Image 1 (tube, rainbow, N blue to C red):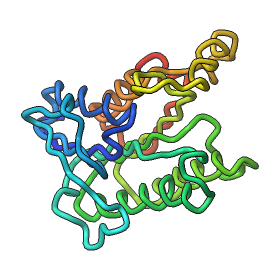
Image 2 (image 1 turned 90 degrees about the vertical axis):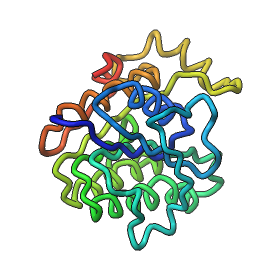
Image 3 (image 1 turned 30 degrees about the horizontal axis):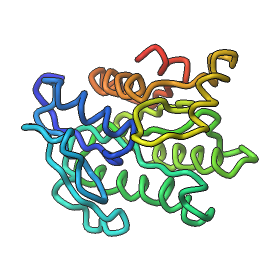
Image 4 (image 1 turned 180 degrees about the vertical axis):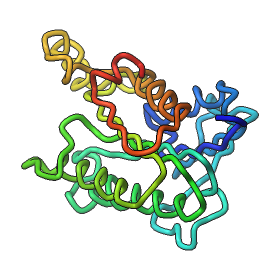
Length: 215
């Protein structure tokens, strides 16, 4: 990139989102990092170049001024357990990313970087993976200059609470094929930022093995 750019980070309070905000704010390639949240931004993420933006993803028409950015990092996502229903899950993992993509594209964004999931496919028999595949395909079809899709496996990082699934995943991951081994959220963020710096036209998919190497 020839001059410092502006980045939007959706899902800024999640594991990957927080890592993105921290790393982008420390990188001179971005002069401003707009951290989108639905609640207050944690104090540890506040910095001179970080601009907190409270957002309602169901109300992005017309596209708001903050959507005018070169790079859009979308780390929105939930789990079936947290969502409580397939309808609620699809709203967070499909409707909201699509609303964000449309708004930022209309405001001139050139590169959309999406955190998806390992196994994402429009043909998957599993609802979770199918929705992830569908949102990938729908965003790619919008016509951004560049789209980067990251497909991590189980994300590792400091969530502030104990999650037994994550602890089991750490142990099982040692024996799992590389494609399915857990990956640090910090590594996912590094790989996405490296892709943003390259800004290659077209579509690039970063599988879990790519992410575990940090880009």
